[in-house]
Amino acid sequence: MESSREVIISGLTKNFGDIIAVNEMSLDVPEGSIFGLLGPNGAGKSTTIRLLCTLLKPVRGTATVAGFDIIESPVKVREVTGVLPEEGNHTLYPTMSAYENLEYFARLYDVPLEEIPGRIEELLSFMDLWERKDDKAGELSTGNRQRLALCRAILHEPSVLLLDEPTAALDPIAAKRVRELILSLSEKYNQTFFINSHNLAEVQRICDAIAIIDNGKIILHGKTNELREKLQAKEQYRLRIASNLGDAEQILRSAEFVEEVTVEADTLLATIRDPYDNNPTLLSQLLDAGVRVVEFAEEEMSLEDLYLEVILGGDR
Image (cartoon, rainbow, N blue to C red; front, side, top):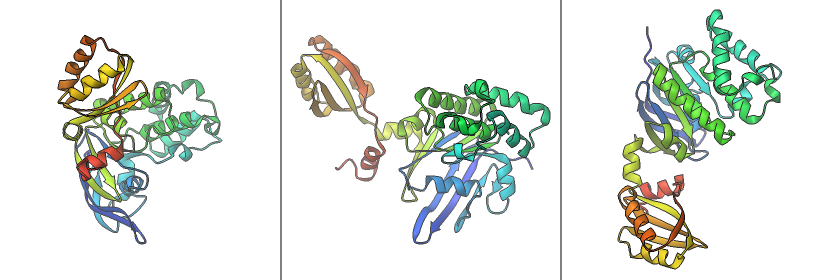
């Protein structure tokens, strides 16, 4: 049978003794989409990945990955998925070179022999590792090992990729390359990505939809753009002022769309309603008053802020 490229989760539950790691999870990740599962450490993200790639068995519920049931067809699930586990760089063989690692795993995945050299060179080149192809994996930096582990996960062109913190330990440039690779693969091959992360800002850049998990339970789920509009109708901005700080503070406090202003040295932190409409107006008012604004940037919303907004309605 020709597999699909979607992930469907129904009532998935896993406990370890009295601890419920995944609690009645139900999700539908469409074919060709990039999905992000967000949550703090211990929320149940990694357990979810281990269930989907058949390393763990649920106590109840099930899921299908690329058309195959994780309970009834675990071998098939492994064939059509690529997995980057948490600290995936530890899944490499340290005494083998970067090239030898990929060559070995390509053979395990039955990649056609004539295609192996080309695939390895393409991936290592894209990840800026081609010049390190003969270096032992154990001698690479943590970031380079993580990039090599990602190459290993996508080497056999799987239908679904399950990535647990794929940019962990990467510097900003390498993290950007990983995000570009994910977007490119999704567009070119219609691959489906299920990505675990605790980084809300990063997930917002690439994911079509997100779900937030806490204590094993999905507490919010939806398309990224819709959730952003819903949850960030009020956003906090950082304004660093080079002159006339007092005038700037007065302008912000008198603006009806500015709900809260905090002063920190030469910086104003302002909570602004409907910023896409109101920020240009505010900036014009500041400049007209002779205020020198050297920075006007959005403060990254943390998961804690998001939880407060969703669960407590912003009541702190």
